[in-house]
Length: 117
Image (cartoon, rainbow, N blue to C red; front, side):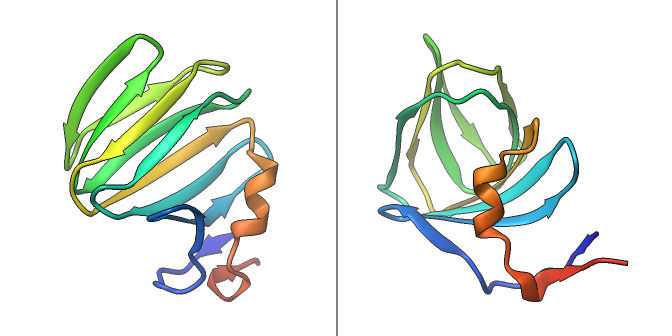
């Protein structure tokens, strides 16, 4: 599959936080998050390992008992089952990969952005 770049198809999952699945495979899924300054991603945990990259902006990410302010170009990995949350300090964009594939996020795939050959 190929994912085509567009600003269409994002869906709000929390106030000020929007998601779009941009690629998926058998064992992984990649999502783009668009987040507004002042919004918060509530604390949660899931069975997926989550690796992320902050494309632009600034946020404070809490992973388990650790917390760090991150800026553009920073990355992280959240182990499976570990509680995490985020405070969005500036308008931000992040790309995250989930393994195994976060199948609930297939609902956020914009069909117009997908080319399967």
